[in-house]
Length: 228
Image (cartoon, rainbow, N blue to C red; front, top):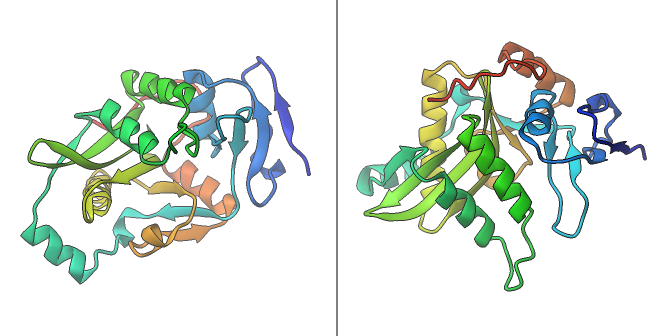
C-alpha cells in the first residue's frame, strides 16, 4: 500500500496514487490553503481523534447530480403537511456542533469532527467557502448540513437530524437550489442508503475528476465562492 507523508510544503500526490478504498496521504495541516487545494483536487480529510490527519480520494465516489434528485411520495406528503423552515448560512456554528455532538460518545470519541476540524471549517465559513443549510421547527434547530463550495460543485461534509425527515428536507432544499444555480454536482464522499434513496450514485474517481473540470473547480489559486 502506498501512502504519502505530507510536509510543510503545500502539495498533494496525484489522486491516482490512492488505494481504491481511498487513502492517499497522511500529515500536513488543516490550513485554509491546504483544505481548498485538497477539495479542488478531489481529496478530503477524514480521521479519528487519535490519528494523524488522513487524506482520502475514494474510488468509486458517491455523488448526487441535482437534476437526478429523487423525492419519494411519502417525503413529498410530509413536506406538504409539516413545512419546516429552511435557511442558508444562518447558523453554521450550530450545524457543525450538532453534527459533531450527535456522533460523539460520552467521552467525546466516535466523531471525526475534532476541535481542530471544527475550527478549520469555521474559518473556511468566515472566508466564504464553507456553508450550512439549516432546518427549523419554530425556533429550534432540528436538522442541517454543511460543506464546501468551489466553482459549481458543493462538497458535502456532514449532516444531522433531530426530528423526522429533517436531514432529508435540507438536502432537498440544497439540491433544488444547486439545480437552479447550474451546479454540476453534490459530492457525497461516502455511500449510504439514505443518500442512495434520494438519487445518489457511485461513479469512478476518473469520472468524478472530469465532473470537477466541468464544474470549473480549478487547481488551487484564485478561488471564489459562488454560493451566496
